[in-house]
Length: 274
Length: 274
Image (cartoon, rainbow over all chains, first blue to last red; front, side, top):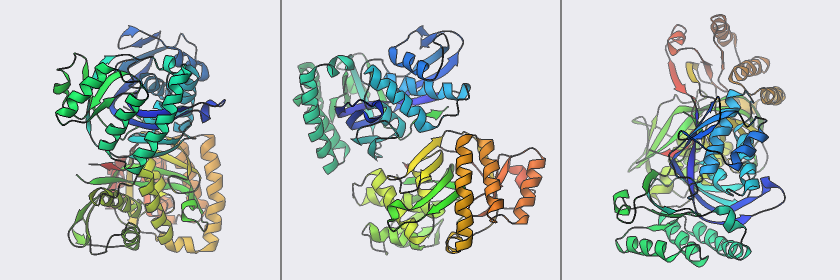
């Protein structure tokens, strides 16, 4: 037995950073996916899909849980790294629950998810993924914070989604640019209000696309693909933050635009033992 | 497509009633089950497993959602009614999500679960079931309230449970007896602290049994069965509030004590579309 944590994508967001990581995070809307990351303790180093791999967020997690870094961990991921699928959050969540069980730490669900949120905020690898991944579903973060502190609403939308992965965007780089952060905050707040006025999947795609365009996070290449998909009658937007198109079209359609595609369902489930 | 809400049992609890139903409920520990209730709108009356059936909590739900009582609803239940499996909460949750979708009410998960919690508190059919059924898992209600107001912790215990159904207990009758309520409050608080000191399944069984004995809610017939199961090396306690034994033994073992048995897994999932 091991633990699985779901991947998630962000439709739009506003960063909210305070001195306390548990009160930091972001408002906005995330979508929990049926694909994700599994973690299992092993006896030597950290490996991702069979290859040596480590990243600051998981090293911080080991530290916070009192583990030595030479403790090994096998991560199996169904999603790409660094493209806006919340890999670091999902990997650290699965790892935290696995460590908790094997090391008999007896910590609760929200205690563990709060620790992972803290690691994410301190490493600037994510601000809202862990909240979304902890609750499952289409999660609206109305007041930012860790999973136990956040104020959320959620929706049981039940759609299949397809993804076209064009490239990476470094979240931490974006979050260090004050001008972009200001625009993100302004349009993120507007987007949140607009979604809550009409909480439907179609509206979520539309608002997410507007947000990506207005903030300048979407480049012309991505915009052209989305417009093309819309002309064919599909809904599409860009994943925040990855150079990734998500759409309700069949994944075969996206293969016309690039090689790297994947599909997943919206999932209502958070971290589980599998 | 229709909606499924999980059943749940309570291991121990303390009622907390205030003037505001959203701040009322109970503290204690509930266990979400893999079995539950499905609901689907239909064109005439309310039916449960094919038979005419109605109850005040669902009538109140219809009223709060602005539906006429002649609206029909098909309920399919995998659990008995009135025996501590949180039938009324699960049935009303599944119904609320089904009504929300078919009537395009566009309400969120916590908006709907809060409404059902309100109906339960006002009808005195349950105080903590809806919180447990909304979150999934083994749910500790640390501060009482509706799903959006409550303070919880939860645990991903992953056990199979077996149940022996001996008879019903009327929750509303118990909650009207001041002396019992006082005992429940006192021992419920103690049980909560004891569980949080050592949050493990074995401890949950032990504390739940102690609570049922000390409050006087467990009669000799149930106690004898539990002692007998313990002599065979199993863990067992009594469901709050039902004349029902739950145990980690195989369901075949319980068939030696009575005809009406069922089995279910602990489930991490709340309300879902199925």
